[in-house]
Image (cartoon, rainbow, N blue to C red; front, side, top):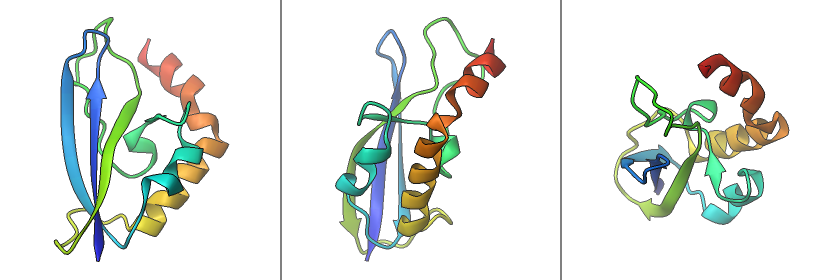
Length: 108
């Protein structure tokens, strides 16, 4: 069994971009929430997923994304990141405070 990860990017004007990926293995949202910023937000590029913002940033953009849901599926993986690796990537990013300072300063 595998896990479908559905996540989104929402800018300050509430414009949204969505993505759905499937990783090998089973993962639950409860395994990720402790490592998310404010138990809600994450940065996809820091855990092996694609960031969903436009390449050209505006004053409405930021670095944070949200997970909509995780779902067990029998479908084949669409990414090379396994459920276990994804969990470890979330943990590592959390320990490093999501690299927030370097990311924000790099965008300005």
